[in-house]
Image 1: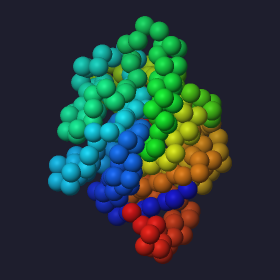
Image 2: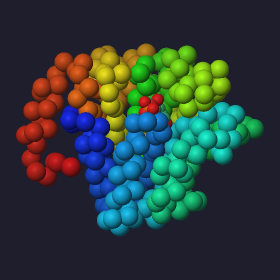
Image 3: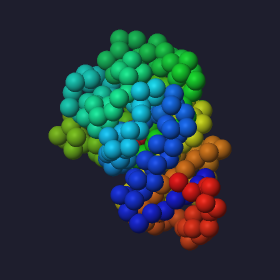
Image 4: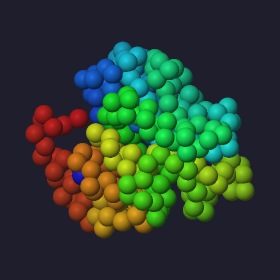
Length: 260
Ligand code: F6R
């Protein structure tokens, strides 16, 4: 795992944007896996700025979102469809037919999940999977106890996660109980995982993900088994890492060709 610790979320998001932009420049038909939530907002703002000011071209890119709430129409203000159009797709030149988000209204959930997996395979697999992390260590909406080899499927949210997203729905009682999410096995098939985490609230999940045992009780810890994972953290999210000084030293002493 490569751990990059930066002063704040602004600097960290710029670094993450450079990593994504490099992939898109090197591979114009790149496949991006995308997350929602608060964490990637600045990263997306940076990508939009790079598109506008530097001509970063997304016309050949294919996107797959990690997850969507079950029973929420795409036009609902708190759907991940709405989020993605408001913060990213509405400002880039991604072709509409290459945007994929799980369908939370599908009548046949198992068939829709199989189709989603097949679409990822047909697109050639995900080049960079952007991830946030829940306070309980979830990635995507793979809550603790998720199978480490799970595929896209329906999941039930934990109370902790429903409380974390309650504000977006005007209270916990209105938060959907179920989601469709890529599985941990789906995420692990990506060629690169780029996980962002900011703030003290995420420090424990990050320490467990990086330095704890690999366990279904901390779904993010499965990334220890992935050959190419980059974590971009701010100081607060890194504050419970035992080897933080070592990770910082490694970053500072990288050869120029390894820098972002
Ligand atoms: C969202 C997702 C989740 C979030 C996580 C952190 O698509 O897959 O795993 O990344 O819940 O959310 P924020 O960034 O809002 O703290």
